Length: 314
Image (cartoon, rainbow, N blue to C red; front, side, top):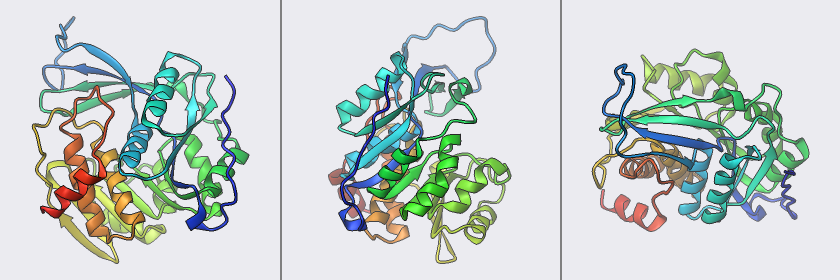
């Protein structure tokens, strides 16, 4: 398998850049297993009537799909193996019309197992053997794609950490999702302090406001957003912290997988279209609630018309 290289045209001015959002990292497959409860009590075996299914879709894939559904021109860059899992990821991007630049990964395509409970909560098991600390995106490819993009959304993988200086020099705005950062792990800090927009979950934070303000004070973030599930989201912008209540899901909750990615994509749609941080976060809460109503075996997202219709009703 050879690397797919994207070569842009003249993209010296942001308005002329043919890519709205370059998504880095987060390509892979999940195996979905529905379990009777979480945490799952020990037993020698369980009968899984709903089936065990493997589908393409990890955080970068979900963000790319959601951005595309909202009409943003999206390009995805990541490592993929020459294996059946990589073929699933390629097929997803082909079917969704998302350009993909795949760098060969001899260790294979990233994969995970998601245990999903009846209430939609999940427990994810990530296979870390599919990456290597020395993995780097080819700098010429990275520089070319960044130069063709208005914005880059960066996943929390080692190659993306190494890419941050190149992206910053390219002049694109940056966003990242720290997921369930506890506010202490130093691995997350380069991402947190380099991005212009920072997303994270409040799940592991004892004091969300303190962590949000520390990110803003130590880094360059214009906006820091902590999602809090059924409690909504906290938005720090212009030194003011605002709590947004959760939006009621339009249907029963079946799986929370991908809700944070949907939130980030909808927020970025608003932010890149010069909406206020609070309006952008409202878009995010709507998209995140919608994502919770979709089965874990699907990789789909809310469309722009539906997003705007729901926002107008609130």
